[in-house]
Structures are given as structure tokens and as C-alpha cells.
Length: 147
Length: 68
Image (cartoon, rainbow over all chains, first blue to last red; front, side):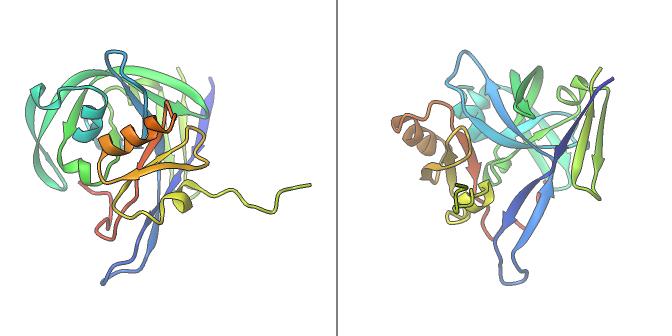
């Protein structure tokens, strides 16, 4: 049984009137959407055990060649309120320790997430790749246990 | 001789462009293009010969947390 241990990455947040600049550490992986032999690009996604599905910004789906708003629309409820997501079957590639890992899933595409520009790797799809996904906040690392 | 120039992190590379999309080279060592939209930054990067850029949104001061 082998494990892959990956350090969290930093996200820099600039200061604003009511809070100083800060750095968030998060479990992030480079991600690409593979769709109809599109020209490849990567973006960042946070591993999110609370997300039922993988969800990506709609603008990134469009750039990958998807007709985003033609997807099946589903009203979803989260901490940030309700939003309609548009679902498409896609192949997702993530880079883990310089190695590509691919999975197929039905991913949601979100207009609201365009502002953040970052995706979520949810349980359906990403978590199915591994026997266990463990977060160690104290050392800012996550560990993936392979099947 | 070891270089005196320390390699910049992704965070340092994108910091000067708050609220904008930044296309980094595939090895994350340099900024290839900057634009306000995904498509624009991608088009600029491709015109500059970067076939597989890494697109990163530089967060602005409204990004208090990643809660959706």
C-alpha cells in the first residue's frame, strides 16, 4: 500500500480596510479539463471533502470548449447560498507530484466561482481515485492512499 | 557558482496583478500574460507560444476566504 504526501499551497490575500494581508494554506492541485481534444491549460483546484461533486468556474469550462449553459442545470445550496450549477461529463486531469492522474465525472460549472477562479475537487470523481484522502492541518500536508 | 537570484514562488509572481488572470509558463517560473478574462489571458499566452499555460487568478482584497 503506498501513500502520496503533498504539501498545501499558499494563496496570498491582499489587505483591505477591515483586515490585514493574509496567507491561506490549502490543499491545491493543478487541474486541467480534457474535452474534445481542446488545447490544454491548467488551473488550480482545492480538494474539498465537503463538496459532493467537482465544481469549476464557468469561464474555465468555456475556455476548455464546453457549451457550459447547455448542461443540465441543478439548483445547489452551500455555505455561500444557493446557485444553479450546469453539469457536464468531463475528463479531469490533476497533477500530483509531477504525475498526471485522470478521472471522469459529472462536474458542475458555476458562474459565482468565476470571481475566485479556482475549482473544487469533490468526492464524486477525485476522491474515488484513492482509498483514503487525509488532511493534516498541523503540518499543512495532505496524504493520498492508493488502492 | 550558485545563482544569487532566488526563484520566485507562484504567489510572488502573481502578486502585482490583483483581481486579474495571470498565465504562467508550464514550469511556473515566469509570467507569460495578464488579462481580466480567462479567454483573453489564454489567447495572449498562446500568441506568445505557451501551449499549455497555468492560469491563476490573482486574488484581490475582496477575497476574504474561500467559502462558497
